[in-house]
Amino acid sequence: MGKIAFLFAGQGSQYPGMGEDFYKKIEEIKNLYETAEAYRAGTIKQCFYSEQEELKITENTQPCLFLTDMACSMALEKKGITADVAAGFSLGEIAGLAYTGILNTEQSFRLVCERGKLMSQAAKLHKGSMVAVLRMNQEELIHLCGQYGVYPVNFNCPGQIAVSGEEKAMQEFQKALKEKNVRFVPIAVSGPFHTPYMESAAEGLTRELESMEIRPAEIPLYSNMTAKPYPKKAEQIIENISGQVCNSVKWEDTIRNMYADGVDIFIECGPGKVLSSLVRKTLKNVLICNVNDMDSLQETVEKVIAYKEGVSC
Image (tube, rainbow, N blue to C red; front, side, top):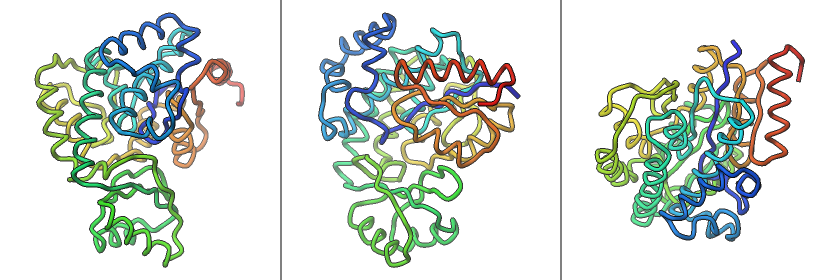
């Protein structure tokens, strides 16, 4: 045991102002944002000063959240904390590609901008939404999804599965959940992500990736699609990256597989504490931290040092 995993936050965790603390106080991170701004004008303003509704738009969310995820991992490395393995939730997997060296940071930002556009275009053709369904029997939920033509897509943790689909079908599905007294929570996204409705986005991502230099990961990056480390061959890597947008996220299995591979320190990189909460509901007796600003960075550093020295946190 004793291995560290960086977990990169996904869409739905965003909020205006995320990452600004690091931008103002760490020169390398300021350079990261300014390089991104040169490629995509307006990104810095959207990250720090936009309204929530503007930031919720997929083609804005994805590049902004990518930068925040990367900033958090860079801040950790400045403090001497590096990951042995990594994973990213949906969009967060693109930050994972950059962190593990499958793509460089510039390629990854270019890819995440294209990903946001492609998924936004697909969402306009197929208006939809997502909800997290809580404490419902998995087999019963999957059966109910089939009845209403929606998809169980993100297997987050015990007792929590995200469901995605077109708007009308999702409205009927939510009525059925209410009739069964099943609790659900809307997810702050703007389309039916991780469903076959995103197939056009997957095709576009494949074309984009085929123009890039793909390298084997320097440390294991666990794939959303398989819950296992990414393969080494370029064509298989591309299949994992592009296929992710129209397939399920096997997050619970990913966390369990990391633990089986010796990880007992999980650090969420990015805004909010969603992934930290999912790990906490999946595993016991592990250290779970989150980093999204200078205060949480210092707290995490102290906890990791104490944990490695055998002090209870």
